[in-house]
Length: 381
Image 1: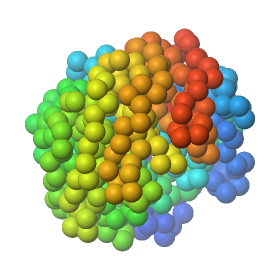
Image 2: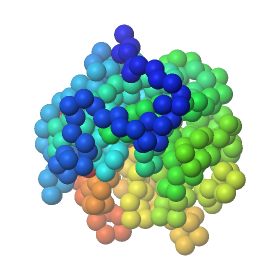
Image 3: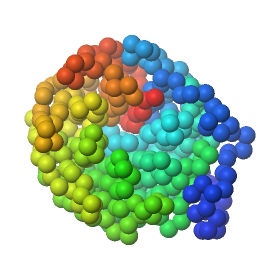
Image 4: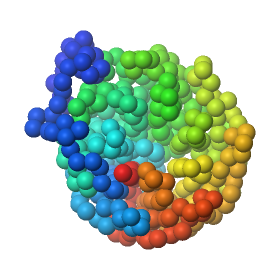
């Protein structure tokens, strides 16, 4: 059963609220600036179809982690059709925002997004709101703007504003992706990730095999999305996930041949290819990066590959097997200081922790077992 969303308000009032012109604090909730500074934590989403939960881990200075608590999202997880180790078949289903003081989680089975106040390693559920579509699987934020990607059916983007720790739907800011898919979506065809560009001027979506393209929506000063996207075909089939380099270029995984491709975002919103390179692995779908190095998760081979880029921003493979994780290697995150990499393996039910050394080299420091299998979504503070 879907949780009722907040009561509807008039469009003018909603826009004022979304732009932060009126207060919308949760009853009894302390403003973010009055809460303790975020601790070093790791959060993992179980995506359980009955009761979705977040696992919270304390991160020590040496990168090791210890379970600190389990917190219900109040919603239900979901599984994309034909998915096994990666139920959401996406990147970015769990996202820290507002200086890591709020955690946003998708509930793909109940078409909602949950908002948590982060209090050290403890989470307090403050809101559950409609995602604005079907099967939400990825979230991105830039400043007070929050975009939710809904992968079910035709696919859609819904935009919100974060006001006093709560999401407010911006009026008339839902855009269809125009895909021909099902609900739940097929794991190879549903949209894979949404993210604002670092400058916040564009919003990018990967469409995987539905159109093998990147759809880019312009973002106006008040968060207004362009009516239609600029569509750029991918260099290789099955564009899945992406991150950004220091120049703001898109560093993307294209899973058909386990490639990493880099694109420059032009002022018109189109993407210009700077090159691609394969790691020769199986199902390179997820990627994270820091300090000029990028780590790809190969779900089919349970390995991590290491990439960088040359002075012309062309991707370069440094190691096809930078580390071996576990079966069904999926989502990953790098600690804010760039020192540690944490990797989920949804097939094995593990979290692998690695220290990042000179030249991006990985040294495994521990494996956490007994994580629910097919968990997906990870974030670190």
